[in-house]
Image (cartoon, rainbow, N blue to C red):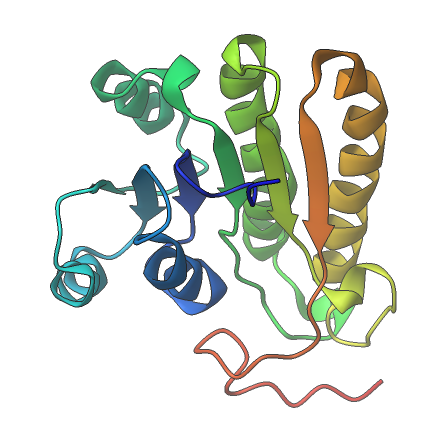
Amino acid sequence: MKPWYEDKTILITGATDGIGRELAKRLHAKAKALVLVGRSDKKFDTLAEELGHSKYVMATFDVTDENELEALFTGIRADEVDAFVSCAGGTSIAEFESLSSVEIRVMLETHVLAPILWLKKLLPVMRPGSRIVFVSSRSGERALTRLSVYTAAKAAIEKLADALRNEYARRGIGFSVVSPGSINTAFTRDWSVDD
């Protein structure tokens, strides 16, 4: 049995940094094509030099922007995507009471609402054998102080995956959740979380 990524068109959000970037680098030789979404043109330029081939499309925008999401799918066909890896992230490390409503909204929109909106676009046209992969966090299972909203968002996406796994099993669409611990990326480099 071939791996889920071999000879597939894979859409990865959060592809300009951290886990999403590493996935792009590791999958580009094995995938049929990559559609990479991230927020930094400069980081995409560096990634393009590293990948050094033309089996990818790069789109720079915020994953929470519905208009840009629609625009992306005028350039590529949603029904050509075989796998969706939701890797976009970010957090504010702070005591709950000191979080602003903007910080809370950004975390929930990035980690929960955006993947839901992407799935609303992709799932109706995905074929049997397609795969959805959510990059979550051990924080979704183990609450950490000063990461309360991030923890809640990761728990929500894990439960969403559980529910959709059951709902889409009859269509042959697989759902996976990857929950790494702390990994040395720009996202975690300055963390100092007491739990």
